[in-house]
Length: 183
Length: 82
Image 1 (tube, rainbow over the protein chains, first blue to last red):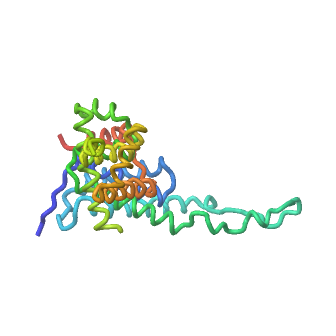
Image 2: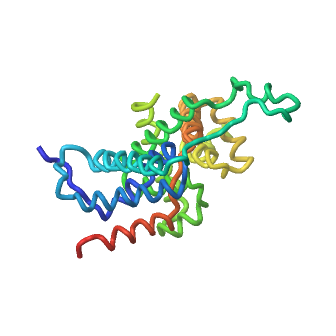
Image 3: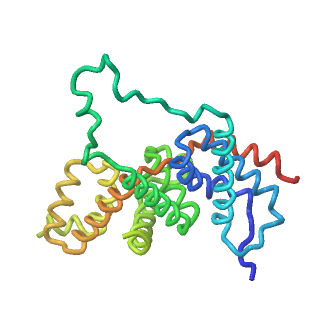
């Protein structure tokens, strides 16, 4: 049963932030992440005919993106020598408390925390996707991008009291959604 | 009593939303705190609202800038069949 259809004209607005958060922890480079996202969209557009409609648009795009990330590392590793890292553990001229500096800091953020943060970020974006498109855009600008109230009002041609009503409704819906899906 | 009635739950909710973005004035903040002492619903709502703010902050979510999105949009537009 095919229930999903593709709308490439809305991809960038709807999914680019989600794909970006997915990519940035995997490649850790802003420019590369951006390139991979645009490559993903272009590849999606080219293989539009192969979309069967079983999965949602986002799931389908993520599947393409995963392949792109793997390809990126394959390409990178084929340039031999670049992936090698040399660390000298015992230099003769090393003085001072160098050993202490290498001891793990138990209060520091570890990889697991980072991973959890990333998953939380994706959960937030998934919840945003369930909101009304305009409300989601306004909420994102206000809460995540930290835009001024005035700037958002001008952009969407609304009054500040309209904005606060939208923000209130969006916050309520977001809290409900996150309580259901995350906490 | 009049003092408390003036700052009703609607106003408290609005102030609470503003406070999440540091846009509530000092006076509004004080009024909200006084209101939440007496009003159980607003106290609960306030805690939930703050939790949402903290959760979003903790996620360190990143977004692409509108310019970067426009670049990708333009690339996509060129590839789209007319």
